[in-house]
Image (tube, rainbow, N blue to C red; front, side, top):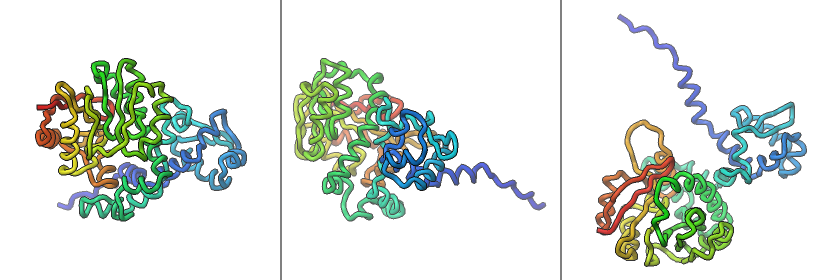
Length: 338
């Protein structure tokens, strides 16, 4: 008996078509860079006026906004006049959860994603294959791109802070050492929420150069010391907690173990290590960590580890994983000296 032909699953085809589209992501990042939502903050605006304010080509801007409007980002209130939607509001710079800087259109990253096939075949970073150098070395050699990347991380940090501040007892910590803490935005957020806490920020000199302004803007500059340097060389001692946010999973096991041993040597009795990064999990449930994981593999060649893999890595550095505190974004993985 011949089985009857199956009806085409048109819904799956439509969903796959939408997921594979890169027109919308690129257009969204471009309008973020051009601050289009900022120009529309006061209300809808004719395309000619909007193009003049943003320094763009009016017909092309109109096509771009129509493409985004059909996805619910912006709205064409009448022919040639565009305004914000609820989905577009977070693209404003003054939005409390602004994502405008979170999604820059960085040509270097786009080129790297174009070599994702290299990562799939070899397990090595697509970025290195595309540019002949590592992601971090590239940023060090391109200060303007580094500043844009730092701004994107600061935008993501605002969301991470909201997720972790209420889930972990930060008030129990006197001095927090943020290892590889970028421009200090995350540490500044913790210190601002806990006036009795103090901080030490460690990162490469070209990265922490912007930290004094970030810390001062948060009103915590007098409670945070900036320490330029490489965390593979040394880490400031005397901290109650050593924070590594989205750092360890960017390195292979050998380098990650080297970093953990440097941190362990700096940790006084009773201090703790706080790791904020995804834990690799199987199954089909959605997790931001699974997306971060692929991003890290493509850009840096690292990747998320399972809990068992983390426990083994910690043990090699004289640390013991004590608990995992789940949040809406990254978990807080706590470890103490053995």
